[in-house]
Every structure is written in structure tokens, then in C-alpha cells.
Length: 327
Image (cartoon, rainbow, N blue to C red; front, side):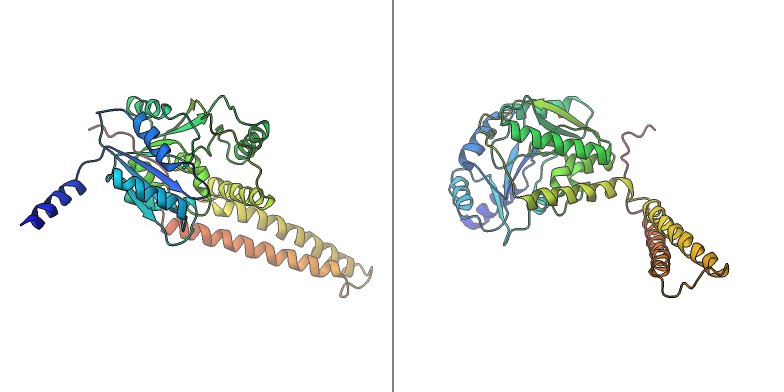
């Protein structure tokens, strides 16, 4: 007779309304997860909302998994999702977004970046102001000069390519409405640019200064390959911002330039031959001119095909949000 009661209570617990979901992806590194959980749990607004904590472990991370297994025995409300191999933080966040149940979602890094009591201020600001996403800006920075220099260069390039000025888009603390997580698609390493992708989708994004954690002061020197990948991610973001909806503007412009250069070269060689100034059959310049014309036509065709695809799917993908309907 105990089994039905247990089943009913289990169903009731799973159907419990959750107001705020705290999502913590564990990918590259992590601090003491027990300490992280307890400090941030204590920092959330008390007795006002129902919470859930969801940890997504990206691949086989034995130490992190052991800590979470012990923690879950003490706090059954914690959910732990373990991926079968390393897919990256963007995938971990996407899986977590699909799993969480709260109307408000808080994302946190798996290590201390900001002082825990700042979380409550950001949650309050989201409820009080008409915004969709609040991102943390660690200010003033208390870590090494090298870290600050890296951040400035990164954000300067980001502003140059996108036109958007933010100071700390890599910070893991973000507070958002559920619809933001549902509509912003993440893949690759684009999780660092989540605020920019949300802005592109038409959401209101606000950056709020917060106190940096005293533990977040370690000097970070990455391998050259990582800096190259981030630069390529920035270029990807540039194309997503500028030409996702207008591919012909980019491919058409480049293709027209190449075709024009090829036309000038072949035209010059044609006049050269017609005026009897010499033969052109064995000149490499002729091959270059023809090659540029062919490449120009191909790039223009790619842009045109992109425009046709976007036109046919324009109703399925929107980059705006309806704020209010007055009836």
C-alpha cells in the first residue's frame, strides 16, 4: 500500500511550481561545488520564491561528480545531468535550458566570479524593471592587470565587429526571463556571446556592475590556439550580426568586386591583343582574370541562394519581440 502513496508524492514533487531555476554548467574548471552551492543558495531571496538548482556536468569529470553525488544526498531538490562526453559549455547550457522549470533562470559559473550576495540584487532588478536579461559586470576588477588587459582587448574587438558596447559578456552570472533561454540558440563556443545573441533576437539586455569575488583573481594565460578560436568566434558573430538576414550584401559585394577585377584584367588583355601589341595565350595574367570572374560569379550565386532560402523561411524565424498588445 505504500507504493501508490510514494508514487503520488513523487509526482506532486515533480509538478511543484518553480519560480527561479539556477543553472550551473560544469565544463572546464570548478571550485568546491558544495561551498559554491551553499553560498549562492543562501544569497537568494529567502521565503519568497521556489527554487531549483540544476548542475550539468560536461563529460567525465570524476571529482565534480563525486561532490555532486554527496551534495544531492543532503539536498534532494538538486538535479544533476551528466553528459556522456565533453560537448562544450554551450551544449551544457542548452541542455540545462531545456530541463529547468522556472520562469526566471539564473546561470552561474562553476567557480566564484562575483560575490554571492549580488545575485539577489540582480533578481530584484529583473522583477522591478522592464528588461529580459541582466548580465553581471565585474566592476571594479580586482584581478591581475593581464586579465583586465585581455578583457579590454576582447570587448574592444567585439564592439568593433558588432557595434555593441559591453564590458563583461563572459561573466557567467546572468538573470533572464524564460523566453530568452527558449529562443536564443547556442552552439560551438558562442555561450560567451549569449547577451549579444539575445540582443540580436530583440530582447532588452542590461549590464549591471557587481562586486568581483575575492577568489576570482588568478592570472589566466591561455594557449595561443584558444585565442585564435575566440577570434574565429568573433568573426562568426560578425557574420551573424551583419549578414544573417542579408547574405547577398556580403557575398554580392565581394563577388562583384572579384568579378569587376577579373573583367578589368581580361578587358585589358583583350585590348592588348586587338591592338596587336602581342600574344596573351601564355600570360598568367589571363588565367588570373578568368579565375577572378568565375569566383565572382560563384560568390554572387551563393549570396543569391542564401537570399532565396531566407525568403522561403522568413515566417519561421523572427528577430523581434512583441512587448505589448493594446486591445
